[in-house]
Length: 356
Image 1 (cartoon, helix red, strand yellow):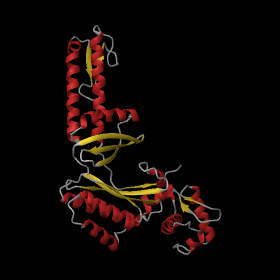
Image 2: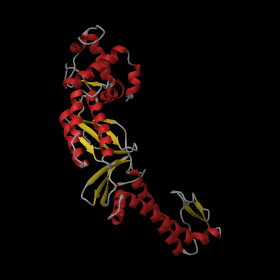
Image 3: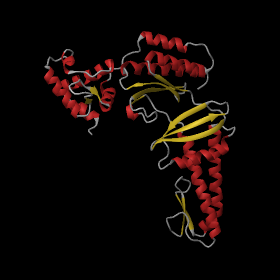
């Protein structure tokens, strides 16, 4: 399938306008848009037959679809994607919407959770969609950690804190990780997590890595000094101890029990390095995104879209996000500025309350 952007570049003005009018009409009414309707709104006076031919071309390109025989056209998911990325005209937040958001965020409550609940309720009412509000990342004692694989390149970490609060974070796992390796990492971390914050957990893992490296170095020192072994990529996560010029970790040696001990320590070292990387990746964050239909891997709602924007603290660090879930025919031009405005306002208020 041809990618949307080159298609848009190759369109003439008439085709581009027909496409834009179909999408805008569909987003407004939720109904298929017919050729006769378009002839009354196009800037160029053309016949309904000409418009039908253009719509057929757009359908052939995969941008429009015909839900019924002889009916009008609706945009496909690919068509919506191209419209949002290239043709969407985003305006300012309407005064009445801004007034409702400001009133909600003006609630004088020191509890950030209460504030975010109010924000979610307001977004649902204003946009008539389901709201998504991710609270600021917390640095508190952890009771339990769970990793959940969402896709090959997406995973969810569920953090349960000692005070009963639960936080979910989406991140990109290291290449090659499997659900079983994630369970193993979670089991290891849960054995250490009680009473520790994420930062303390990370420091503990780094200390464990250094200790294992020292043990291996101590056991292998005589082999290295005698020229029987050498370090490859010493100090790096990919380091290996090569014996007798072979590329594998440990080859044959006189004292097999010592070699087995080194191999065991190496396995443990690599496992802890993977876990340390898991901890580092949980801090990942993204900018304003619009997920359409099946692009939305997190929620797996093929008939829905998610418009989400992060909010930041005073140090410009992403600490949470607000968003709206609704049908793919969301009024993106209206919803995007509402979500963006709300995110900026929440970021300022959260920072002012010292919770960032």
